[in-house]
Image (cartoon, rainbow, N blue to C red):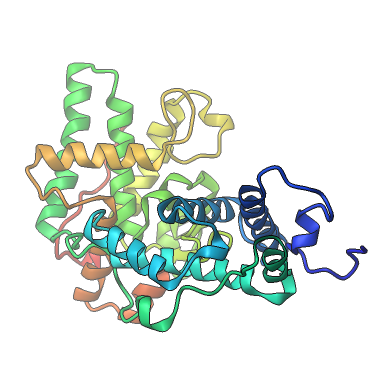
Length: 351
């Protein structure tokens, strides 16, 4: 039979017509996942990792139910959600994501455009149904559903944290330790997260050329604005880009000093674009940022719930407290020789 005009991801494009299957249930389930992947990659242009993660989640649900998609019922969805909440303690935002993925998969396998209902009727005498409905899924009621314990850091906590990071540099230099460059780099990384309101991943992916001049702030030189090229993805889309204006001169001083006097001392610094380099010439990873933050936080006896993202929350909160327009702040945040000037809570430089 001709496949001309069939939608991408159709059953007849994935399964060979007329071929007897040795394990038909398993084969059809995998073919559904493969066809769904083709539909998402081709028709919806989703990122391969997003598609892979969604397929893996559907396999997890199949393993939990110990049944095939054409055997699933709404009660299976209810039981899985109860398990995720009561036993695994998943956050509400995570539950909503899981339900959304499951709903999309059921939309795909129940659509007549992809012919899976007919295929299942022919092979198994039944067909798949949508198991996610209004009465058994979580409604999206709030703009922010993150962990409420991840609060902004206070100005005093920021001051103590940055002072401690600077002290690690001074101690390493005084004792002649090998980690002086890394300590200086990390101190600057944390000030950058706070100074421009960045996520750890965004910070990790920064390159030296991402800084630009700002005609409205010529005194900041080439560090007047920052092009964030790897912002948070949304529903499989490419990373969001945004331009962030530099509003904290003390943070600009910190980065400028690092770029001028510290980064050139790293291996292959002249031929690598990454802003934050490791001793082996690689790019500093978000996990390494999180680990160093946790080390400093624990040494200071701060709350265990504090993570690098709290510095981003602090940037937004402190800007608004100092009189900046809330809408402007949220839009822009997307939600050695001379040492740089230190962060001073409440000073004009932080506004």
